[in-house]
Length: 482
Image (cartoon, rainbow, N blue to C red; front, side):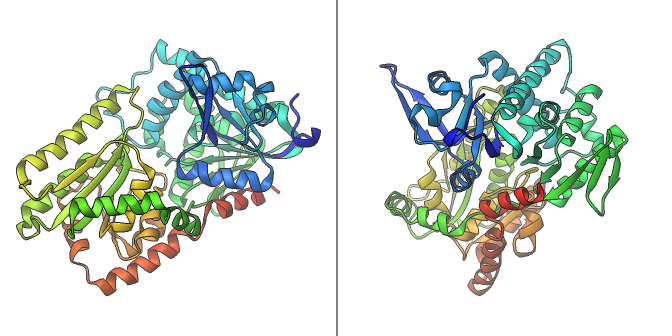
């Protein structure tokens, strides 16, 4: 059994697929460490250090596996790394690939974001049965590690759709623990959730109901989960009290919107590398107005329709030719899945078509960049006149919150299907993400919005975006487990 600092087991634990650090294996066999990326990981990393909390995560790469194997019991902090308390699980690559790519990202993500082309997919066959067994094994590895590391009565925070089965598995091993599960994605309504095989759907719901507290980003997603529990399990649901009773246990359902730490974001956005990118972008685009989007090339992010809307805007408003540039930062995502490679290619084709139709010698109407660069993204936020966030469906969308903080005079064009619309929609320009013409009209409305109105809306957007920073979001859930 692994022991925490000072020989004590851990009173607070968090479990997630991705951890706070990653490792790269060099040609000479040495390992180099870097901090994990993404707003959630960054925010939780700070919380973890403040609370002396153990973080259990998976080894995602050969470098990660090398580091985990060299560390006693996978405890990176016991191997001399400056990580805080982290246990990295060396899950066999075949099991990890099936659990992560085939089930989590190609099945559960698709269901909860309503992404399937249903005349053709999904198709649940014997191959999926093997993949599901790997997902079970992956969740069991996390449950066993948490059971080993947790002190009596410890609080355990399990994160996201990768680990939907872990709460029930952990409860079977350690009924003394207080367990929370949090879903960072949307949740599908019952009629779509039922695309899953019946036994899989039941196991997923019962897995999360193994927790004492199941958290969601919005009331909408929490309601959909309760609807599924009622329709699929026949569970007792109290929507007023937000509880689900099933199998002799009651799970509380919580709504915890995740925001951004405005002070930390601004501190990072003022660093020299960001200032340098701002100067370079200004040199590139001059004094033209900027429509900005920052996304992963993820199917749910709706980048192709966003580009189509910009193209329609240029067609309808020739007076803006030469006076506006669309900065579209679309960073690679899940390129080991063919659907994502094809989608990235479609994004690039759309951008090229706009360039071919409208570009002049001294005006590039769209600047597409598919190389991840966080400082450049922060620079783009600061320069934005209009921020376009038009996902088909999104659990929250932190881009919609970061942008108004860093560019308080920009207009936000926001999909009504983003979870963030519940908090920001009143002050944004809300759009139906499938309606290209309405999105084009919203882009124009954002560009011509009077400065006073921009400032009024921007202040309200920034206040809403920073109302629940990661520390508060996490502490509220910890408090719910007492």
